[in-house]
Image 1 (cartoon, rainbow, N blue to C red):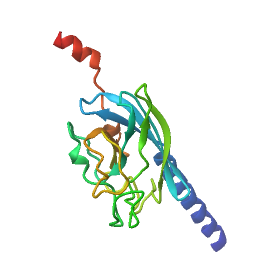
Image 2 (image 1 turned 180 degrees about the vertical axis):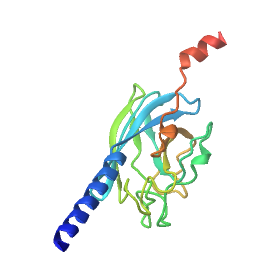
Image 3 (image 1 turned 90 degrees about the vertical axis):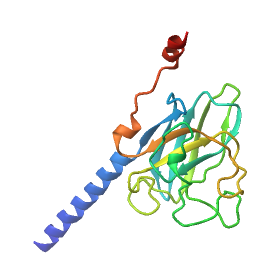
Image 4 (image 1 turned 45 degrees about the horizontal axis):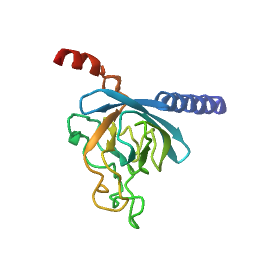
Length: 192
C-alpha cells in the first residue's frame, strides 16, 4: 500500500512540474518602441541549463545593438528606465568579454540587417523560466531591452550601449504582455 501511495505522489508531482513548465515555456513577449508601437517579439524557451530567446524585430537602424534582460517587469516609455538595471543575481561585472563577468541578463549584440529587421536566436546560459534566483519570471518578472548602440562587452555598468529604444515585459501576467499596440498610420492621419 505504501508503494502505491508513493508512486501516486511521485506521478502527481511530475505532472504538476510538467504543467508548470508548459505554461511558462515557450513564452512570447511583445516588443514595443518608445511610442508603444509593436515592433516585434521575443520568444523564450526553457532548455537544459539555459533559456533560448528567438528575437524577431523590425524598424531598427542597421548595425549592432545591445540587448539585455533587465531586473523589473516594467516598460514605461519613453526611456524605459523603469526596467531597472541588468538582471544580475550573482553580483557579477557586466560584459560577455569581462574576465569577472557576466550579468545573467547579458546577451550577444543583436545584428540588424539593412532592411531594419532581425530574426535571430540568442541564449541566456544559467537562466530559467521555472522558479529560483536565476528565473526570468522571479517576483513579477523581468524585461528585455534593446539599446540604440552596440554593447562593447566590458564597460560598466551596461556596455556603453546607449539609450533604451525597445522594451518587452517578461511576465506570466497576460495584461503586461498583451498591451494593445498603437497603429502609427492612425496617429499620422490625426496629425495631418
